[in-house]
Image (tube, rainbow, N blue to C red; front, top):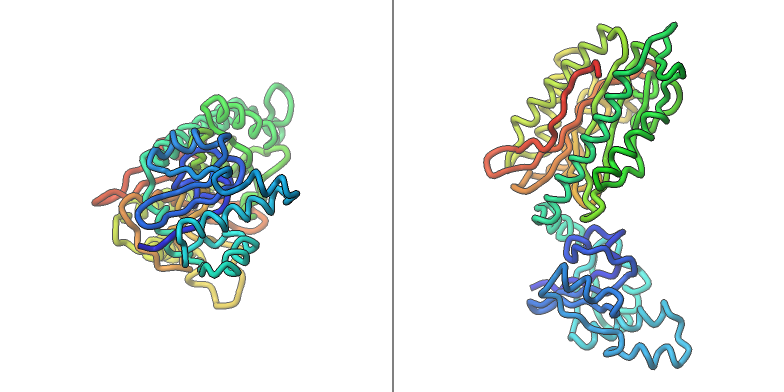
Length: 379
């Protein structure tokens, strides 16, 4: 059995949060060795870790000599690294796999102590592909919060009044900032966090991850892309809708129809064994058949600014973007338990764009749609 080492906190390390599903703010050593799991934790976090992972064997800093190290004047950070080295020595660790973000300083210390450490990105990625019950529940709660936020955005847009090409609410121009504030309130009341989001309008909607700002005009696209975090589990959701206040441009209406069609085709084709690239190709073929350029039709070496210029989707869990990739760059096979965000979109630089995005879970024989929200352009 491969020995595993991690040294991080669970708030910033999805690899470690997957193994110890509790919020621990200070970095600690986690070890899997000879069919047992260990953590070097002080009394501040030991009980929290045990509650989340009853089989976890706690090694206290006192057992490893923290009192003597500090009494001798050892710097606090240096003492913690020394404890990690001592723990590996006590457990008989000679070689171990570590995640890509394992601290180089600790890796150097371990190698100096004749412990071989090697990065195994694929192993740690695979461990997180299938969500635990705690993670899946967290994703579902985050998705509920995302839908609450999207509902708040739609309500405000629905109240908008067109006056001379501008959308007013309470006799003032409706801005992206006002919509974002309403979304944050709704998401927070649902027990999640919305530290970042996209509410863009007009030409901004064709600029990829442009967060959006300013007053909204009638007839232009408004793209709302939300990826809130469940406060309890640290898991994310992800969803996007496109809205228009006023008369809908005929070209935008056609794009929206293609995007919703593409999304439905992708969801229906999702199943274990399907490659992410194959789903991406399915959508690209649909768009190309209607005259839109895609990543697969563009000349090599050129940058695509119009059409479908991004991947179809990505995994979602303890990070908003994680494996598997659903695009042209990798050939990941989907596995039962994967959670995917699928987000076809069409854009024209200087005009704007349209995108719809749903969250799905790969099941034994297909896909379960976790998103339950209207695709209507008119809020």
